[in-house]
Image: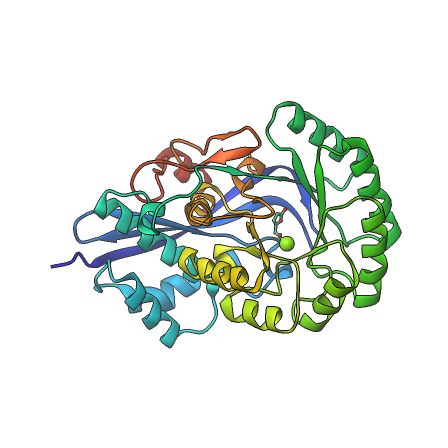
Length: 372
Ligand code: MUC
Ligand code: MG
């Protein structure tokens, strides 16, 4: 008889960032993680995590709403059910509740971790096995200050920590942003790939001007320049410029990817377990993108180690990540709540070994950072 789900705990954990992280819609000084612990009737435990960036300034789910959704709506649907029936549980949750993909991602991650521990297999093995074990990771420069960003990038390059960079822009007038980006590209030179993320801040005509300027400055990729629902703008911009566009907020799940690609979008997509509703759903997006010739990129919602590891197990199974990944979330935080943090080296990160996610909670650290 299969083990059943005995308890589900959703814990708010606040960890300060190593420096202010300035996005077009908010500045983050702390990251809140919703840590999910699912225990089964055999006493095994699975871990999951949900985060967002800038709370409700980014999207409709907040860490607090994720906890409430799990405690009040998901738990009653899951408790007492077979813990290994992950697809059946997901289908049931999706019939009974709409949206709330961040919360669903944390649940799916915890169930997969539990399954891995039960079978004594790493999560990537449950997904068919890893094609890659060292995965490239870029760094986001978002201090808000050009000179500080250049210093930060140069020390990361010297340490072989990261060699590619994403700049968060869109909160300032266009030409101020262009000067900031061009100065950083000029200082880092040809060896570093410099990309920008506008987080939807531009209208289409500002985006057209911005892309022309950024193309001339040697920028490699422009992420989500225009509002998420305006697929037509992304299609038109992708046809107008050879500077490629990375669709982020516009594509949460496989249906979004299908619609954007069918409308004629050419470029790349940021896969995120949080947007899709879990690692399995994010791989569905990758399959549709692959079939449509859209490039892949492993994206983050600045998860801590648990969400980052879950993403890495999924991305490791893909043949090609054309634009690498941004799975640096744990390194933006001042501390960690796992016993053994991820091993970042040589401009990337090692896929964790061990059953499930390959992680264990440091109970003292969790007690220190959990919200009182
Ligand atoms: C986003 O919008 O891409 C990823 C890196 C970062 O700094 O913010 C995120 C979210
Ligand atoms: Mg983005």
